[in-house]
Amino acid sequence: MQIYPSHYINGQWLKAQSSQVFEVVESATEQAMATVPAGTQAEATQAVLAARAAFEGWSALSAEERAVYLDKISAGLKTRIDEMGTAIAREVGMPIKLAKAVQVGGPIWNWANFAKVTRGFAWEHKVGNSLVVREPIGVVGCITPWNFPLNQITLKVAAAMGAGCTVVLKPSEVAPVNAMILAEIIHEAGVPAGVFNLVNGEGPVVGEVLATHPEVDMVSFTGSTRAGKRVAELASQSVKRVALELGGKSASVILPDADLEAAVKGTVSACLLNSGQTCSAHTRMLLPESLYEQAKPLIAAAFAKFTLGPSLEETSKLGPLVSAVQRDRVKAFIKQGIAEGAEVIAGGDVDAGFDKGFYVQPTALRVKPNDTLAREEIFGPVLVVLTYKEEDEAVRIANDTIYGLGGGVWSKDEAHAIRIARRIRTGQVDINGGMFNSSAPFGGYKQSGNGRENGVYGFEEFLEFKSLQLKA
Image 1 (spheres, rainbow, N blue to C red):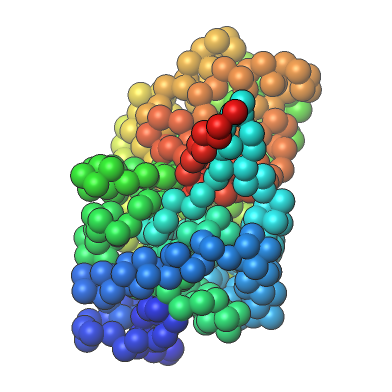
Image 2 (cartoon, helix red, strand yellow):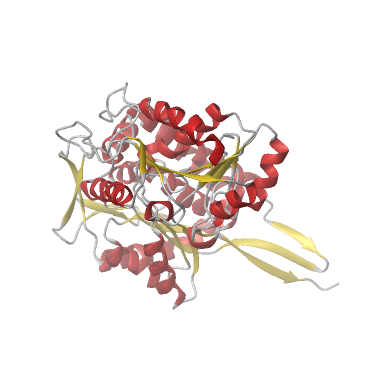
């Protein structure tokens, strides 16, 4: 078991002040794999002040100088891809092949891409007699989740550092090992002291310091809608900028003229990635009522291909959930759905067949629009199927949610699909299974949050405008 005794503050590994630790549990074995220290308010404050002291020097560097550091970090991640992929597979439960490709491959690309964005960004332009310049917002508190832990850290920290900000990171205490490895890589890259700081800890302790401290200029948070509301409430007292990437209940709308088999397969894949522990997962399949009986065996067959297995086995298609808490929560939702009259298409309230590990049998249920499972974010390998009679009804069902993060539309007529997609109130819509684009803006409408991540759009979240009025 790996024991991490320190936080990373002001360019140093500082031994934790508290003896309290978080035990990191491997999701496939239920065995402790590491411990990290539980940070205190004093340590969080120390990190904030270190970031503040470093801000002037870091923001004064040229864009090229900052970009060089981002490239070094990307290169450092490449050299440790096996170690990092294994750590995330053990922490989160994603099968090892996918963990290396998605959970580590994505961040490697994003660190390098933010270096490109930093170099190519238009930092100033003329508007009449004004010179409009872009400047870093300052010290940023980054609070990140456990489901795509390294990538969510990267989308905040790499963008903020490239923009000229300094950061304090509080990673999830459920999956923090990847963040500790990243801190080692950042240190080895020679990033100046105080530019990047990491304090492990609970949200009500470390997170609330970041949300309330007067020397923090912005908080970027990814997590549950409930926790995001708390962060926004606290941050409002000092009028900080807040970027929130929260929950989702995304609908995949299969139109009557779609390739049904391709649409079903694509929707199931978009639902079950990372065992459904994805905020933008397509967890609602909207089918024409006339096609439901034809689609049922296709759904069952698609689910059958996602065989459960330990995350470190190369043959596993679907791994365990992240924790016992998450497993029990998802199982409770499945039971509730069946109790409310849902029709089981695949899986259901059945034993996953493992003595150890936080496994849940992937499940598809037909439900009604007002059922609990049609409205609540489950965050597990559960697809709900709803039927509609007319396209206008499909759009109404897709939009009948407090969320607006992702979604999909399937049709053999791409122009038709795009017309429907434009009517769906959500931050991104995949047309006929269009691939995720890490340069396009990612974020949500409604209670899925505000602000955007990825590429230049995420970069600009960490910048202010300044107008210099010049004498004519």
